[in-house]
Amino acid sequence: MSKILLVEDNEMNRDMLSRRLERKGYEVVIAIDGPSGVEMAETHTPDLILMDMSLPILDGWEATRQLKADPATKRIPVIALTAHAMSSDREKALEAGCDDYDTKPVELPRLLEKIEALLAKTAARETL
Image (tube, rainbow, N blue to C red; front, side, top):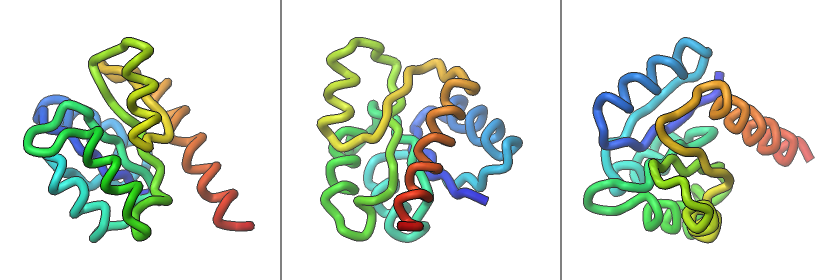
């Protein structure tokens, strides 16, 4: 079972998305802000991180930069989640080190495709 770290400060979004992911068979751990997201990535070593970009204290852009700079967490794929759907945001997410990008409100089938593609890519890289 793959473990997903969901870093999301909005309680409604967090509850809805974590329940839907658990129903699809994922184990979900939750962080509610950037610093706890970075810390939980280090302690739980998830297979993938869903990172809200608009977080309190430390935003998702900076949290992702920290994760990608740390040898212990840099290999964990990160999908940016943001309500901003401008192409410049996608570029900004990829520059920060995100592996993919999705917009809110989340369309679960589309997000699941991205999650499964990144998990498969990571698994293939680890078997080499």
